[in-house]
Amino acid sequence: MKIDILTLFPESFAPFRESIISRAQKAGTIEINFINIRDFSNDKHKKCDDAPFGGGAGMLMSVQPVYDAVKSVLTEKSKVIFPTPAGKIYNSEKARELASEQHLIFICGHYEGIDERLIQLFNAEELTIGDYVLTGGEIPTMVIVDSLLRFVPGVLKQESLSEESFTNGLLEYPQYTRPQVFNGLAVPNVLLSGNHAEIYKWREQASKQKTIRNRPDLLKGDENDEN
Ligand code: 4GS
Image 1 (tube, helix red, strand yellow):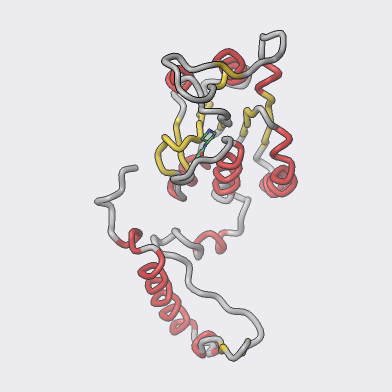
Image 2: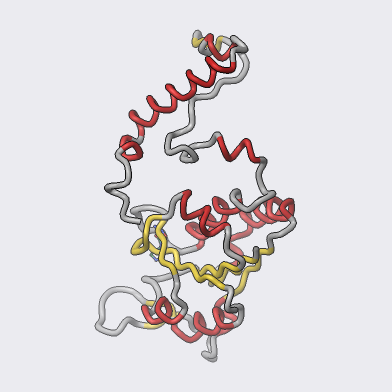
């Protein structure tokens, strides 16, 4: 899989680069590139923002540099993603879906967003990581790329995938490590029993309890699922 990340701030990916690149390299099949949108600006001052028609607060990203930056990496195999609070909810199901693509192009928005025609022209998928407004599309892009890479074959050990939160529609069960008693709190006895059938039953039950407590919405089935 190839991932091209188009951004006005490639340096903001520095901490992410370290960890993500090394994990990606383990898989051997992933290539991640960072492309500076400003390099594509035809403006003599490399300007990359412009005022919105119709007025209103703030600026939009200029159409030309974003368009040319996407064009520079676009092929028939590409899927373009635009993280925005106006998108569909991103979740682990979407992560799995994106992980099966050959080429992803992320447009990191800045200012108030991008011209709607860019979304149309590239058939960009608009995705949101949650109902809050960030200062740029870099963090949502990091979130999406980091979380989808785990579904690319070879990146993670299979077991770590099958037991984690959301895989079975429930939150992950509580986990414990040494010591057996910490600050007066003991590890549940069943986990020390060596009885794998009992441990499995306990974990399933504990998963359900945690889901009811923290995320009752996950148990409601599909009728509220708009995605
Ligand atoms: C999100 C979000 C976001 C919106 C980008 C304001 C800069 C910012 N992107 N999920 N302009 N939440 N984007 O807040 O995806």
